[in-house]
Amino acid sequence: MSKARQEMRARALQSIVGAAFFSVESAVIVALSIVLFGLGYQPFEWWQAAYWLIFGAVAETLYLGVTITDPNAAERAVSARLKEQFDPHDVENPVARERLKRALEYRRLISEAAAKHKGAMRHNIESTASELTAWIEQIYNLAKRMDAFEENEVINRDRRTVPMDLDNLRRRLKVEESAAVREQLEEAIQTKETQLANLRSLENNIKRADIQLDHTLSALGTVYAQVQLIDAREVDSARAQRLQENIREEVLSLEDTIAAFDEVQSFHARS
Image (tube, rainbow, N blue to C red):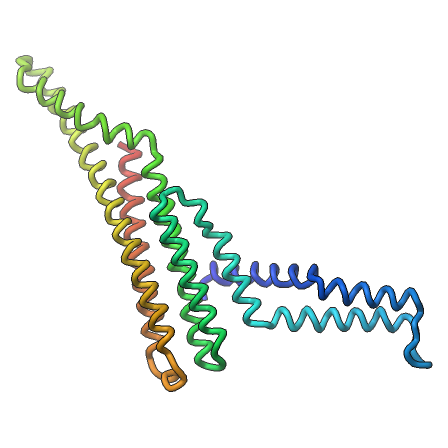
């Protein structure tokens, strides 16, 4: 399990403890033990009022222990953390936002599928769901980069003006007679051509990112369908491992797309 996912599970555990401690059940345990202590109620002759406080502490500890070790509660908390960390509302692009929502839903459904099983099969499906965390993170990162591109005023301005500037420079070069001026125009044209090529690369990366997100969502749907097909007879098979390997390949593919996007955008920022 990656460090990021370990940290997410640790935060999820904190959420579980906090939710359990401030739950209605916990409040009833604490309140009842305090009230009975205050009343001095003695169900047995040997019973002392202070025993109610001890009883309350033990009952509260047991309740928290059962809640914390409940795998369903842990997975619900992880899913909630995922939705909080990779909030679809942070994504402005409506298509990318909807894809992120559906990706989170697929992960939740796969986690729910794991809860229906026990033993090794449950472990295999939970491991698959855990692998999806990195996948969703990359979907979120790619969607945010699409937002950054679409909202970048400088890039949007350059996409409109650079082609026109380049045409104007070329027209001037055709009629310019001064050798010195022609040399400067040729240098300016070369710079504009490089800038335009960089802008085209950014546009192509946006198209690639859109296609990649669509493909990724389809792959997530395929993983969910395959999880539904895993049954007890296949616990010892390589199916779960193949699923996790396919997920890792998709994550690497998303990372490559993001790296290419960042490289071109960084070059444009320097130019």
